[in-house]
Amino acid sequence: MKQAMAAAIVISALAACSTTQYPIDSQRSIAQVTVKSITPTPGADLNERSTIRAQIEYTITPFDPGAEYYLAPLFDSTEGLGHTFNELERFTDGVRLTGASSALPFSYSVARELQSPRLARPIRVSFYVIVRTASHKSLVIGKTREMMFGPAR
Image (cartoon, rainbow, N blue to C red; front, side):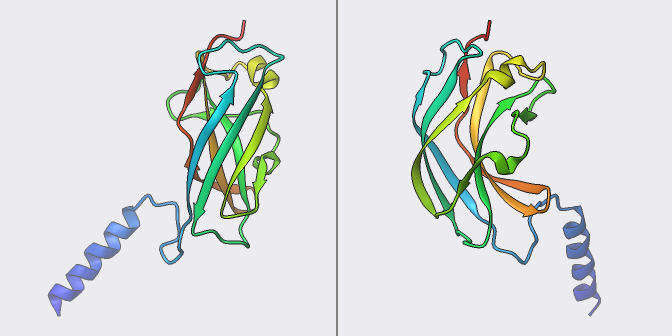
């Protein structure tokens, strides 16, 4: 009995220290996201007139038709490793994903990001699949590989 109680205390303590972002009793979605083609080509210089055009393929497993999934580009920030941003007003301004998998064209003007002092150089961008978890809250469930572009000026 004491061993069972001690094991329960250890399990509770470990669960309390956990950094998981998902409810333990829920089944979370995972997205596989791939850039099939992109222009300008990685390495090219970008300017305020540049628009990134990409063909993106994604698969969300398991797909919950009641959830809200979005695709958006995120750029590396000067705030340091792991910090990203874009100039969308809300994450819901990204492209809404309505199916479990698809290949879709994506177009995004980078003018506002290039004007931002937060944009790290060289320019690095990845496309993220995000799911809304609550009002004004979201969770990244997948992303593409990072692509790097040249200076803006």
